[in-house]
Image (tube, rainbow, N blue to C red; front, side, top):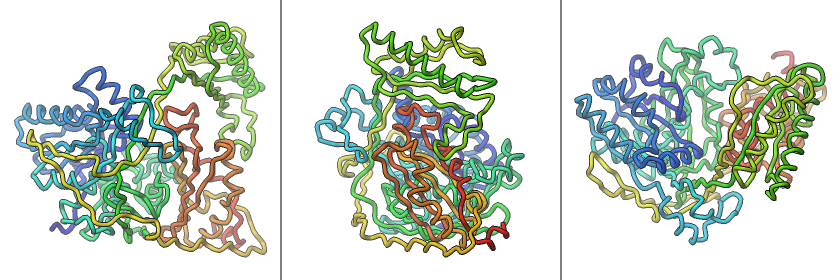
Length: 598
């Protein structure tokens, strides 16, 4: 058994910079490199690519940008490479990797994990009565499906490593699965080692978004602004008990501190005490995060429970078209002029739609950026002299969506004064791709391995099943008794990061000091959250608040808050990335003593 392993997080999405691999190989002293390329929308893009060319459908950057220029160093150092770059066509990705290995005259074994792709079963699944696990909607029509993929876990990755694989390629696995697979292989963890599995999964979660753990998207961005160009990618050094440290290559840019790691831990996790993965249900509520030294943070005390008996499946399907564009207005009354232009554009387009007996828009969106339209009732208009108008709509037909773009262009000489446009061709309609999530029994998803052409079934059995009554919820902090309160902005007391989960917005808030948490919890109550985000939320949407005493944090989960999320949304921020920033200037009443100490 290894004493510890060092894993470098080298990619967080398809299209990220290719700087991580050479950086980590040169200065990281890593045993494994892990790459996350996938998101729900990425899967639909890859599915379209495969439909056009059967040999496509995977993250081609993995072959051309990761392996081709670095394969000699990877082989020389004996570094194992683990990735979900296979997308919807992992076998083709594996074949491309093997061809490159042969071309460079190397002796490396490639394993491919199979079984997640359920698209061929679309009609059967539709007849099976599956409904969306969040909205309850019926299963999409089979002919509209773009992708259907189950989220697999880390044990197949570990089995491939046990068989001697140097490179492991999966299709749709959870983002942390490749890191967890390395831990299972290195330490011999069993399926019932829930705390250890949770710790390995948290390590994977911390590094799965690359430099988001080393200063990217960080509340205290001013600490790293001069080093972003050379930002370091994260390294998790994991111990056999599941505890780990997070660091980065020496001499690289960015920063690793309690704030960067805490923000990433709370990023897009939903219920922090029931973060459900294929191999374990994680409880992060008591996780302790401690600074050990410059750019070294220790993460301990992760709790785990049995996994559920189901795999989560994400299907994407086509549902009409959307069209939109941006333009700026400059000068006096810029925001009012922008809104008048948008109103005229929709009036003209609806007239055209009626003339051609076409349906009305299913949804429209107008946002005036620079006039605090993102902040709703809680924002104060800046009466900006320069604003950007974002105008968009959904329509069942491409022609109907395109009509809006044509009429926007045709208003160029009839517009209120001050319109300015960065020159370029007219935008085009694009398909609306919706997400449909459901649960399927694990027994209905046979998983297999292909190791250099030899295929074997992966046998996975679990003894216990997660139940919500296994979780002991911590006591929420008591509201402080303030005789002489002083209001300070939340950012003085906390770090914050936000993101999405389908149509849900996650906002993680972490107190900079433990004594600040009761004041923050009291201030971010029902009324405060609805005042800040009510204009984003559906009329019947709800939200949940979760407390994490271990890291002095809280997670806010707002349901039905992203206009459908992803490319199904017309919003400027369809993934809720800016929601924490909207919240960080919220006034928090604190004691005079705390206010004077800030």
